[in-house]
Every structure is written in C-alpha cells, then in structure tokens.
Length: 156
Image (cartoon, rainbow, N blue to C red; front, side):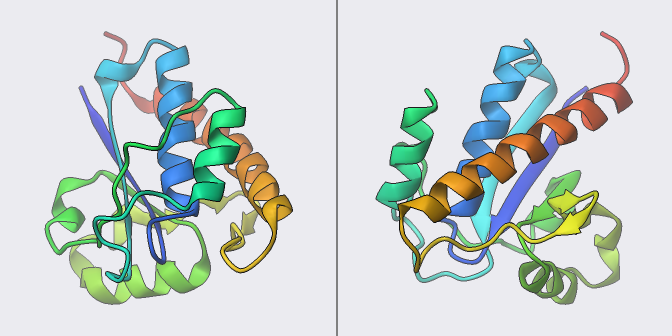
C-alpha cells in the first residue's frame, strides 16, 4: 500500500521543497520508501520550473539532504484526487487549497504543523537564520507525520 503526500507552500521554492526532502529522508531512514509517494507544489505559478531557493538547498545540504534536483510546480486540479494527504505550510495556503479543492478533497487537506496548529513561517524575505528555523520546524513536523502515517498503514 502506498500513501501519497503533497507538501504545499506559496511558490514551491522554500518551505515545501524542504518538507519534501526532509520527509523523504525520514521515510528512507526507516526503510519505508515503497510505502510513500512524496511531492511538493506551490499555490502560485511564478517559480514553476525553477530549482529551490539556494538558501533552502544550503540548509538541507548541511543536514545531509539533497533537494537541488527538485523543480517548482503549481498545484493542479488533479492533485486533489491524486494525493491522500495534502499539507499546507501555513493557514493562508490552506485556505487557498480549500477554495480550489471544493468539497471533493477537503478531508485530504490540513495544516502541516497541526498539533499544535501553527504556520511554518515563510523565510523568503528574511536572513539565513529563518531557513534554519524552518528546517527545525519541518524536521520535527516530519517525524510526527511519519509516525502517524506509518502507524496507520497496514503491516506488509
């Protein structure tokens, strides 16, 4: 059984690529790669086709995670039927996703940091320290997410 997860932020160059890379690293570390399909996207289209922000690539690399091959893309209508879990990095993007999904996929949408509910701040306009903080938040959130999803999946 495969569980598909989509991480979503505004432009798909800072937070969601980090979330995709960090979550993938946790999945690989636990030997669960065959049970997950992982991707990221943005609610906006202006960065489509671009690599992640160099500061996201750098902070990930410092932690042994390579996200340099990722390319930004915009969330599509098909994503709402394709992904089992769609995680917004903040409330603004969650609202955008809810508006686009309508009633058909609302049960698949949630805030990435849901317990306790909080936004992953957008580090784009800040300094490198913001990327370190975002990495830390996503690292902790990814561990909780994988624990929850791995617990739900049937044993192989």
